[in-house]
Image 1 (cartoon, helix red, strand yellow):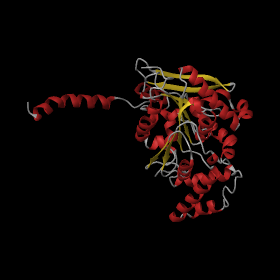
Image 2 (tube, rainbow, N blue to C red; image 1 turned 135 degrees about the vertical axis):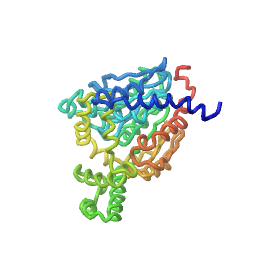
Image 3 (tube, rainbow, N blue to C red; image 1 turned 90 degrees about the horizontal axis):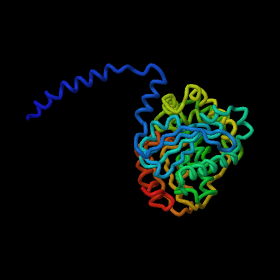
Image 4 (spheres, rainbow, N blue to C red; image 1 turned 30 degrees about the vertical axis):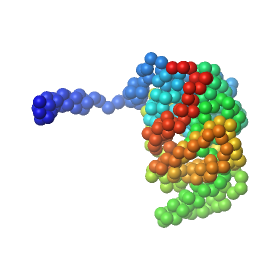
Length: 373
């Protein structure tokens, strides 16, 4: 049969499918849209896990999403950034591939996302301390180890979550296959100074007199280890985001922020509470953590992976790379993401998946603490 004859036979089918597709109405509501997303990424494998639930951690109910194609895969806990910038509601975009190789846990931390909505600011405010947040992370890892019967898990920390993750790696290395850092916090005051200097340079090149005036008025910015007032920090971030220091070649994280509206895990009330939780966590935690020099950590007793965006000035990737060179660990690897800034998993989701599978997953190997397949 000739190619032309085949095309003639196939054409009615193609036209029929096209007509059917054009007849599908756009979602009429957020609920309809999220149902579509939920159905597309539904876990259908026989040994899969798909859970959205509250766990009692640190004396309060905290929300987790647990998803994976095979519950015997190693557990990977993601510690979101911010503080308060939850990853669960945008994980539908970047995470689905991870779930074929890991059981992935998204956790809305104390004061953030669904956990913030669940508990309310009045009950949470007295407990919003760095040490309590680290203790929460320890409790969460301990719960996951028990729940899935795995001696070790992977912990991935992004931005603020990289502070929590590095503390976990220091305190509980025996619990981890590896610690994975994205947007890794090291010497936070120096990172702030580098971000400010880079942003001022961009504004001058751009001839942006308003930005230059605002940034110069902040000098000396992040001097020593003193706390940067939040108002000053927000002015710096406004222009840093404008020039692509958070998301490469984009002006800020508007796309990521909009993606939360398609989250199947989030009710309308949860979506409405996200930014209140983000502001709440920022007010209680951000200024203090930006005074810390985590670059003083020179040794870890578990493997380390760093995924760094080449254009990250929100948390300086050049500084993290310098720290990496000095750090001693049983094994370590740095992966550069050349087309990313701070939101690596959203900016280069394919390379993130490939890097997790190539460099992280083998560290679990055929370990005795993983159930045999």
